[in-house]
Length: 144
View (spheres, rainbow, N blue to C red):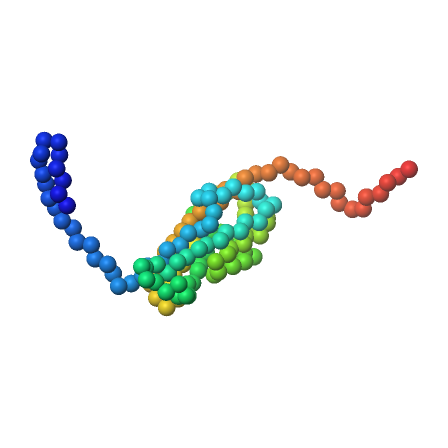
């Protein structure tokens, strides 16, 4: 690369670009970067991964692993009743997240035949506080 400035002074430099013979996967979560929800609602996240590479095999099997971290505590917070922790779709049931907390959901995608090659994507989940809802317990009856 040669660069010339406005007073006709030049400088040159070179770099080497090496293409590895391995295809690194790419992954993304089909969601806005920040997702706002309320505790009474379930959260469903979908990941899309491609094997990578210019001439990659689209039929190459990918493996997925989801994690959920509470940003307040920094601890893993994946509910035991979450569905799809190792698939393309993660479903966190209603009432599983704590209101007022912020979580980071991450998915790691890797080639099943080359587990060392992986890619990671994240999304932030904000669980807002909602107004209380009154519930009448018992039977309702009309009196004359």
